[in-house]
Image (cartoon, rainbow, N blue to C red; front, side):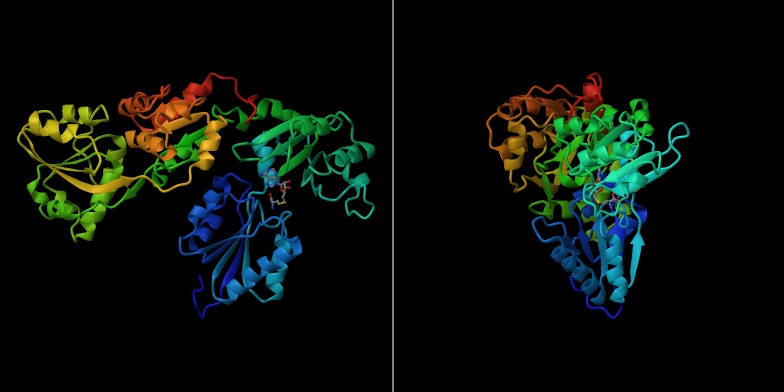
Length: 520
Ligand code: SAH
C-alpha cells in the first residue's frame, strides 16, 4: 500500500508480547491499528493481526530456509523504504524488541539511514514465561538477583562470549533463552563452575500459549527429562531455588480447561466472547466458522417496513445480527431511532436485548425462556390484534409468526434483514483433527451451525467424525438439531447464553484432575 505522501514516514519497533495476544501493550495495539505496513515474525500470534486495517500490508518476515542474513537485509529494506514512502511501518517482534532478536541491529540501521523511529517495549518471554509458570524470578527467601543470557552459544567453544566461571555464580536466578540445542552443555557447565547438581531447574516451553508446558528437575536431571518430554523451542531455561516455589504457585496449567481443545463453530465476527471465556479458562480454541452473514436477497420488504415504522405497535428481534442489520439499514435509508418512538420492542434473549441497548433502546419484553416459545409466552395478551414487525434472517423458524397470527390474532409482517450462508472453506485440516481425536469439545450456538457443519464436512451423520469429543449446545433447540445429526450433546446450560455455555463447558471438565494432564 504505497500512500504517496509528503510527510516523512516512521518505523515503530513494537514488542508483540510473548505469545498470548492479550499481552501486547496498549501503545502496540494502537500502532497496529494505524499502521500502513506491518512486518511480523514467526512467534507473533495471528490474532494480533486482526487489529491491522484491511487495507494495510501484512508481511511475514520469518520465512524458514532463507539465509538469515539475506532475510535480515530484506526486512531492513522493507522498513527503510516504507518510511521513505511516507508509511507508518510497524515492525512487530516477539516479546520485547530489544531482548535477543536483532531489534538493536534494526534500530541501528534506521538511525544510520536517517529514518525516524520509535521503540515500543513489549512483555518479554523472559518476564512472562516465569510468570505463567508460577516461578517468581526474585523472592525474598530465595533470590535477590537475576542473570539473563542466551543459550545459543555453544558452551564448549572457547570463542564464546559467555564466561561460564563468572556466570555460574553471578546471580541467584539464571535465565537462558534459546537454550534447547545446548541444554546438556549448559547444565554441565553450571555444575562444573560451582552450582550444586541438586539446584532446581525448569524448562518453560511455549510460555503463555494454550499449550505451554513446564518441565521441572535439577541441574543433573533436567536434560533427561526434557528429552523424554521432547521439549522443543521456543523455551526458556530457569535455574535457581525460585523454581521450587512453583509447586504451590503454578496457576496457568491448573485452570479447568488447560490442555483441552475446543471447537467454535460460530460466525467469525461473533466468536470473540466465547473464545475469550474459553481461553481464560485455559482452553485452546480452534475456530471453524460454519456461518457467514450476508445482506438479504432483496431489501424491498425491509425498506417498505422501515418507511412506515410508525404503523407498527411492536417490533421484534430474534438475534443480535438482526438488530445490527436492521439499524444499519434504518440509518442508510435516512431514518434514525425516532422512527421507533411509537413502537414497543421485543428481544428473544439477553444477547439480542443487549444489542438493542447498545443501539440506545430498552426492550419492553425479554422472555424468561430464550426461544420462540418463550417470546410467545411473554407477549401473550400484550399483542392481541396488534400490528407486529418481525425482523430476522431468511431461514428462521416459522413458529413465531404463525403463533402470533393464530393465537394472538396479530397482523405480522416478517422482513428479512440478513441471510446466513455456508462459508467456502477448506475442511481437510478440521477433518484430520477430528479423525485424530484432537478436539475435546465441539460447541454449537445455533441449529444452523450444526446443520452447516454436517454440510461442510459432507457427512450424513456428524457421529461419523465427532467420535471422541463432547458436544456442547447453547439450548434445547440446538441440542435437538444435534441429536437429529447423530450426536449426543452432553453439555447444555440452563440459560441459553454464551457465558452460560462457557460455564457449562468448564463445569464438565472441572472435576477431572487438572494441572497434570499432558496436552495433546
Ligand atoms: N524478543 C524475544 C526473544 C526472542 S529470541 C522476547 O523478548 O521474548 C527467541 C527466544 O525467546 C526463544 O528461543 C526462547 O528462548 C524465548 N521465547 C520467546 N517466546 C517464548 C515463549 N512463548 N515461551 C518460551 N520461550 C520463548
